[in-house]
Length: 357
Image 1: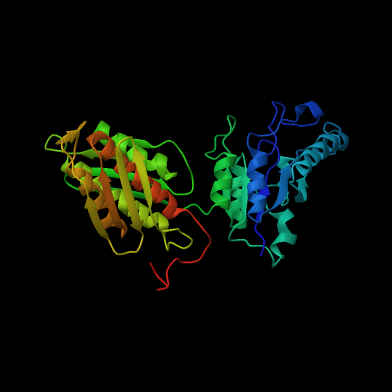
Image 2: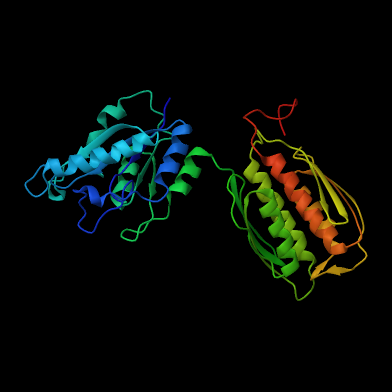
């Protein structure tokens, strides 16, 4: 079965001018990132159908000839980039006509509704107006309102392509106790600058290593009882991160599972890990200093143990060297690099002879 991406034209594929009519060649300006996004979706198996309201098209004020030229040029440019539209569906009525074929009505969709080869569960609609979202609701498919200055919206084309093509593995964990309030967000299939705030700047820096070198989007916001000490903040952040990783990985199909070794000047750290579902942590190393920055070094292995307990992770972490700052940072970086390898998709099979992880 084939998923269909239904797409509005003006304001979605091409920018909408002030007079709301693209009736001249010089008015054609493509929306940012639309071409790479559609190529990604094409490669994911999507077909594309344009569904557009063109008020009074064919009337004296909006003759068909002034529409066809720019529209055909737009289609030719898309085709030159490898993007072909299965269909272009146009409603030419006025809003006051209340025609059933005018979005958000679905009168133009009848042939598609009768097509048994369409994967409606994966199909979606992209547009810049609320009427496009209502159209999607009427079709019972997912709707994405593209972000524009004129009509608002929350999505851009890169985000839409990621959402539909990557089947992103995401999780949001909110952990609240008497000692801490923590929110962790992960997206294992999208890179981004880590957003970390725990109240401990050096710990923030270490968590940034996990997101940056792990190759995934990570956001952590922790409010802890730092007036007492750092223990609850570090421990509970580890538990929340571990839970988020577990939820994002889901059934773990296609993951790589294993480890990484990393040098940092005189320091060498090794992180061998396995998302086995059986939490176990082994740490080999020592620190001469009680603190590095504002982070007690005794809490470094404790953090990783917390991650293991909450995620079902087996981690063997070893570090040796002379500089404690390097050793702590190498622990976090090697763990991040091991995570990067282990959560990377390598197909759809479950990497276990047991049939479960």
